[in-house]
Image 1 (cartoon, rainbow over the protein chains, first blue to last red):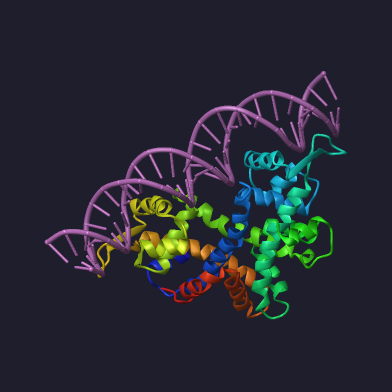
Image 2 (image 1 turned 120 degrees about the vertical axis):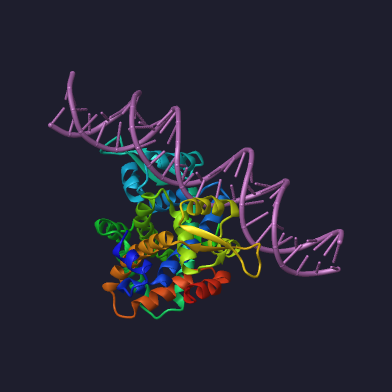
Length: 167
Length: 167
DNA sequence: AAATTTAAGTCAGTGATGTTGACATATCTC
DNA sequence: GAGATATGTCAACATCACTGACTTAAATTT
């Protein structure tokens, strides 16, 4: 048990009494609603949240290999293969053997897959735009900085590169 | 398919070409890491993310009823009961019949449950504090505004009340 | 007092997403 | 040719969510 937990449990005054519950909860609610809208659109095609992530990152980095995708999503080969199979079967994603290394399966979206990926991104973008609309100019930059800083230290640079170096 | 998707698919210039992919992705990565640390602490006791949510909101609103908790979490009675049973069996949560309405089961944390809830909140708070530390003063307020605005319109006021009207 | 509604608990079945560990195959590298 | 690497696949399992139907007990309405 942490020092903070002990202190609180005994009712002592403690620095950690100043926990920002509001931000913790808002992050939870905001994320819940951020993914719920795409979820409904995906359900239309029998897809789920996992399919969304694959569509999104293949859209952003066409020609991605399986290994790269696994590293981004931080899931296992098994989990990925299940959803990837669905997407390939329904002609949203295509595989091509790599030029240099023919063991690699490079992933691309078909026009159908790209249309879906963009539709979902547009939904999420609209929500973000709407949220930023009521805030001072330059807020987007600050929110980007905040979210970047929320990422685990060892991962942060990788994420920054991925996010900045768009397709 | 949306107008945006069609436009993008055909390569035409379009307002939605300016989708903020960075913010979409950062929100995903930030949330992933925001919950991963508590997840590891919970696994120690054989609990999962669902247990965390119950602990958190019972901690914040002691005496909460089942119906209120269901409304906050937006899950079904079945899903809640499973994790609630675990928490009660392991003496993290207690139930008391309501004073006014004895059908209600009002939920409270035991000292053990409170210690865990505070430990988890402290982990998340530390991450948030760390992220805000590098940003201009007043950033916390702006981030709170942003996250609030990200919540679904019909739910936003309810969330605001919950978040502001702490225990 | 009887009928209805409400709060909660429970049963059975299902689906999506994640995990582990082991093993197969093709291809590249040394 | 040997070994490493990229991917695919099999079996088994855990968590967390869902639906629909039903029960119990207490409150409310008529």
